[in-house]
Length: 139
Length: 318
Ligand code: FES
Image 1 (tube, each protein chain N blue to C red):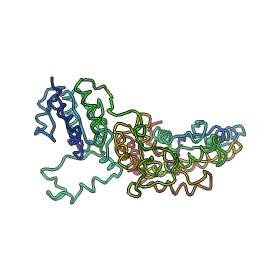
Image 2 (image 1 turned 90 degrees about the vertical axis):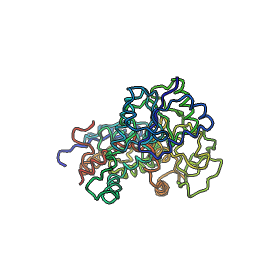
Image 3 (image 1 turned 120 degrees about the vertical axis):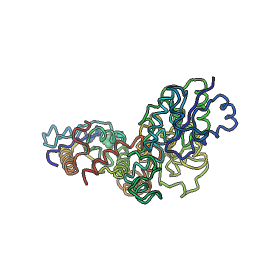
Image 4 (image 1 turned 180 degrees about the vertical axis):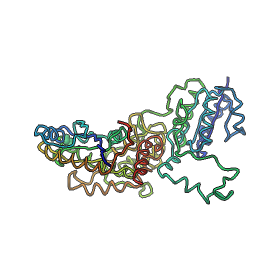
């Protein structure tokens, strides 16, 4: 798929992943600019319905960024998210949508480099998968 | 003046037509106030009779069943034109229901209705009495015609049917009214909820549930938290988990995704943490047939946009 630039919605928890993304920016790290970041208080706040809504509305992939295990500001939010994403991916796969389009990553506030790397990997993966929507589709 | 009533069935099992008997002796109060103008399950009437009726001459029409064939579609369009108010009666008309799970297996209908299935003339010549053409997807009623109100359930429970008739007979059916509670089924369930954690997921035939405690606590996938009340939690009271026939509460949105979220939050394999991940996954894996379980009635209504994307992906890959 040449010329395909995937659209990504990234739900980033404010205490770790969003701070990591900020750090990537202040460090002037280069990474693919395909994501629309949405800051949430905790990855545990991300409802599966939001993820599906993003896919329906035109996203090719959804990234959820949370704190590393043990680091969640609300102690167990990221564990909840992990289980939800695990089930959601199963349901998406059964629906015929590549589960790789929904990705959960742990990024700490000091891991600007890791955030940039995660974005690069995810965008590369989505390019490999191809667009979820028809040309001229929603979004 | 009597209420001019029509009841029609599309892709249905017939249970909705029978459900009116659930009113019991209450039916004797309702019947004298009705003028049944069209109800194929009950009185002989053909499409021609319906066509002859003046426009908007039926006070209330109830449609049960999923919209599955071209004929279903024509008939409900005709009913819509002839009726002042038209309601979806039962889970199939409301949400697509069980028959709409066929949408999840594209190609399924060709297998079932394709070559060799019908004993009539040999394929591909269409037999003279060929059944009406199938629509590509099974649809809830409101995808085909505007729907004024809903009497939900599989089939609608007596209490809700009575509520509907009370409103209809006094001319008080509101636009958009759903004859069920906005609150979740759990609110009217007598079982007690304690654990708030799931250490296993089981199917109903695998356990004899404790009669007093919450079925979800016992590992059954009970859709009570995301489903409208209105049936007095009839299934949980009988030891069976709620499968969601009254449809999601207004707050729940997509019932399958809401339930998925609730289930995943509750799963525990000991202390939470990285060490528990593999075991948590194992518990989550024991949810057999997530689509059929979580979307049992609501697949057509809620999963179609995603399904369309998936179909397109399939075409692209092919
Ligand atoms: S605060 Fe970051 S995952 Fe909970």
